[in-house]
Image 1 (cartoon, protein in one colour):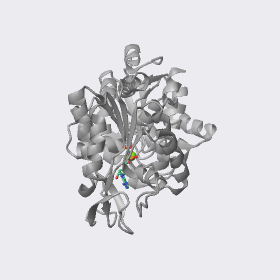
Image 2 (cartoon, rainbow, N blue to C red):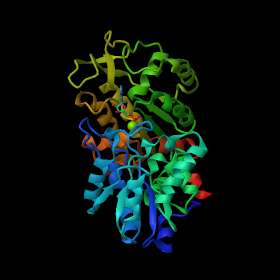
Image 3 (cartoon, rainbow, N blue to C red):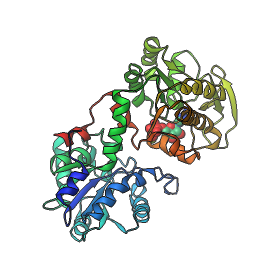
Image 4 (tube, rainbow, N blue to C red):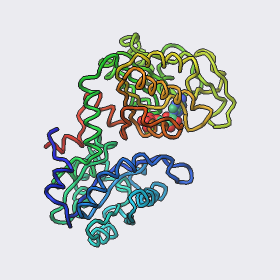
Length: 405
Ligand code: ADP
Ligand code: MG
């Protein structure tokens, strides 16, 4: 890897220097704003601890959810600051703004080994602007927090596929280094991207249908089988002529899906039964149904038991597995069995067949822990969904390339 890493920065020395770190604290929250899975916070600790030990003045930046460029208390990083303080065993102050007066005062007031967090970078519309000058202006403001002799550590693996101000533009303005998490993720994923042992099975699910249909195309070329469940399978089932009723459906993608089925039909593995629900709710009436029998006005919120069996069979002989996206609405107990079953099948393939298994995606990783599965049963749990997918597709990650420049 042709970039400098945190170890290089530590060798240079960070004592009394301001170090701006882009972390990934985009954790899932429940309705009351409690963190339901702290995985990404825990994954960010090694970099932060190393900087603290080196005596740096650490300024963390991150986003949470999609506040769409507006200040919105619902997306405040305050639960993160609290959880992080606890996990680090050291107080992490949260600035009241992103690059405003409070952030500056707090950054100036840091002592060696102190850690602070600026507010959600996506409170500022310039963070995700398509206009490089606009992003650059915001990046200048972030960089100003790190004063003279500052440095930038890119550790938010979940966002390195985005050319955003706090990820990409700041790296052009400060000496930039890959953090421990980014380094580790890339080293694991490069094995899967470059020389996956076959059979290589990709498991796709989740909700972001339009995002992921392109992924099927890219990965079908590399993988031996692509198993598809979750919210994205219904557009494919519709393309095969099934009436998916009120299930998640991207109508404008049906034609694309027909094309995918034609070209990669023998590689794509689709569900054979479903869990239909009367409504999108934990207490909905449910029924195990064949593909053509979702009751009128109902929706499918999980794959059925025969599908789990079929998917497990394909996974059992795999030598490499990459899984992104839950098979159903696992957050509700009634619709969690598909995800739990497939996750267990991957764990079994890892143990029994020596399969190299990687899970990527915020919700996918969270599901493993929330469903009480053995995290250590996978070879690697990635903190990045989109980032890991894009990397495996062979796309360039702007947040990584910028470190190589
Ligand atoms: P990841 O974060 O792992 O990349 P996504 O964000 O794409 O995954 O998707 C996760 C979400 O997909 C979960 O919140 C889950 O409830 C939802 N989901 C899965 N299956 C369905 C379905 N059949 N209908 C609606 N939502 C679904
Ligand atoms: Mg997600």
